[in-house]
Length: 252
Image (cartoon, rainbow, N blue to C red; front, side):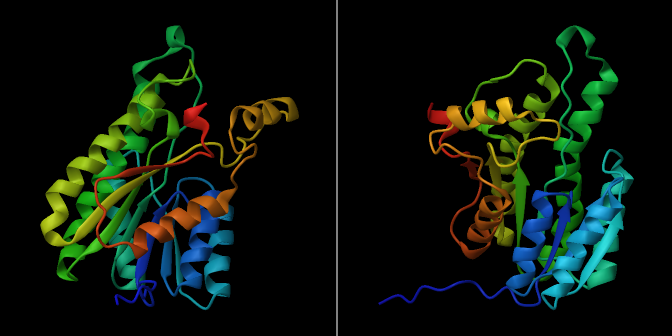
């Protein structure tokens, strides 16, 4: 009989780009499994420090690193800084995202670049910088973040054109990276969140409308993403996949 158990993550090192809100809970759950965590932030240092405090409270090391992921050198420098701070890199979680509503007629090239550079290009650049270090250790994990709408294969909301295109690109990036890196034992998968947390400024009426449109009838909460991250780390035979965590939103 085959014995099933959780992968031993003790003393592994994870880098999370985007340590706010959901990232904070993911960091805490990783630390509870023995992982040291580097947290990257662009402007929200206070939230990143709060996430680091959760990691340290679990008895693990944490590093808080500022990075401008819209610039290639920012991505490369971030990975180097994380390894310098914590000694190695086993897990890369590309969570950083720009989510801005902009009517089509008001879109500019700068709006496009602002979103696509962070949501898509930075995931590639951080992975490119991380892979040589993972190869030295005989493998690793890369977890990208897409969106339930992109995984569903069609846009659902007007005003988010660059965001949708970038998140659809993340799915393609995940598949291509998985193929490129399979022989290195680096597994690459993506998570496509749905109604996990209400965006700042969401009214009670808007929140209830989302709940009514979601078959499970509620917002998921940050822990549901953390559970999926851990599930991907515990698996050894899935790569190139994008998994929706959306309460069934895509089937309604």
